Length: 463
Ligand code: LLP
Image (cartoon, rainbow, N blue to C red; front, side, top):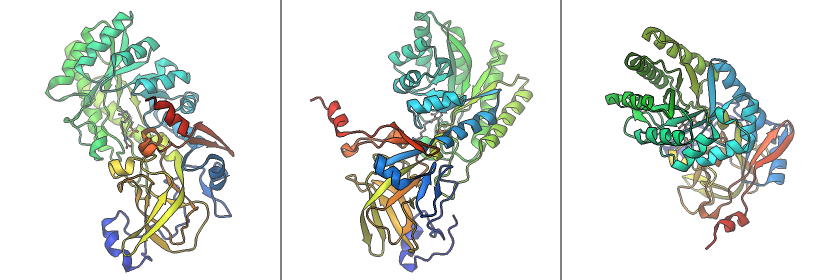
C-alpha cells in the first residue's frame, strides 16, 4: 500500500501535518500483506476473508468486537523461529503477549518453550500440559507462593531479578529438597529506541540487576554460593517493538563479557545466555520488521564472535519473542456505530469496542492501520479517527486513518496486528465485556477464549 497523492484536498492539510500520515493510500481496498495475517484476502465480492471465511459470517456467528487469530499463521511463525535458531538454541514464546490453553498446545506441537511472568500464566501453561521443564519463570516481584509453585512444578528456569530473590528462590528450593536452575537477569545499560514504558535495559528502571558497578558480578557470586541454585546463565531483555539490531548486539557483547569475568573469577563457564524478546512487527505499512532467520543469524554471529575472542565456548542461546509470533496473526473486528464529521478537522468513527480491547494507542501512542472489510468502496478517502465507546476522549483505537468517505453505521472495519498485548491487556473499563478470541484455521473457526458476559461481571461483584 503506497501513500502518494493526496486526493483529500487542502481541507485536511493542517490536520495532516500533525498526524502520522502524510497522504492517504492510493487504494483503500488494498490489504497490505505486511500488516495482515497470512491467510487474509479480499474475495471477489469484496468481503475480507481469513482462513477462507468471510468476516461478515464471522461477525454473525461470534459477534463484534472480536479478535480473529489465524492459527496457521501462528504455527508458521513458531516454526520459522524454531527453524531459524535450530538445534543449538531455544525459543521461548513470551506468554504475556497472549496466552490461552490453545496457544500452549500449539507451542508444544511446534516445539517451542514458554516464558511466563506470573502465577496465572504459570497455571495456564501447566493446566494446558506444557512440560514444566520447558517453562521459564520471570518477574521482578514474584511472590513466595509463585516461587513455591514454580519450584514444585519443576520449571526449567527461574529468572532471578533482584538480590532478595536470589536468596528467596534458593531458600524455597532447598526447603523442597531441590536445586533450582536459574538465570540472572541483568540490565546492560542500552537505551533501546522504543517507547519509554517498554524499554527495559537502561539502568533507571525496575527490572534486573545492573552490569554497571559490578552488581551483576556480585549477584553471580552470591548465586554460585547457594546450594539451592544451579546458575545456568545470564539473561538480558532490552525492550519491546525494536527494529534496530544494534541494541541486541551491545547487549550480547556485554553479557558475554560478564561470562568471561565469571570464568576468570570462578573458573566456571555458564552454559546459557538468553537475549530476551522485543523484536518489532509491522503495525502500519511504514514498519519493516526483520525476519526470524536474519535475527537468528545476527545474534548467533555476535555471540560466537564475542565468545571466540574471550576464549569461551559458545553458550546455548535462547530468545523470547512474544509480539513477533502472535502480533501479526490476529485482527480486531469492529462494527461501525456513530459517525461524526467535524468540519475542517476529521471524522470521528465510533466502534463497538475501544480502549478496553486495545489500550496500546492510549498508553504508548501506538500506531495502527484499519480497513473497511465487509465490502469494497469506490468512494474517496476520508480522514478519520477511529474511537471506542468509552467515557473518555483518550479512547482512541487508530489515531489517524483514511477510510472510504461512504463509510456507514453497520459496516465492519478491522484493525490488523492486534494479536499481541491487546486481549492480554484488555480491561473491563466501563464494565465492558472483554471480547472473545476466535481461532480460524482452514475454513473452520472456534472460540479459544470466550466473550465475557454480564454474568461474569456480576459473579465477581460479591458485595
Ligand atoms: N522477555 C521478557 C523478559 C519480557 O519482559 C518481554 C516483554 C518479552 C520477552 C517479550 O517481548 P516481545 O517480544 O513481545 O516484545 N505491553 C507492551 C509490551 C510490554 C513487553 C513486556 N515484556 C506493548 O503492548 O507494547
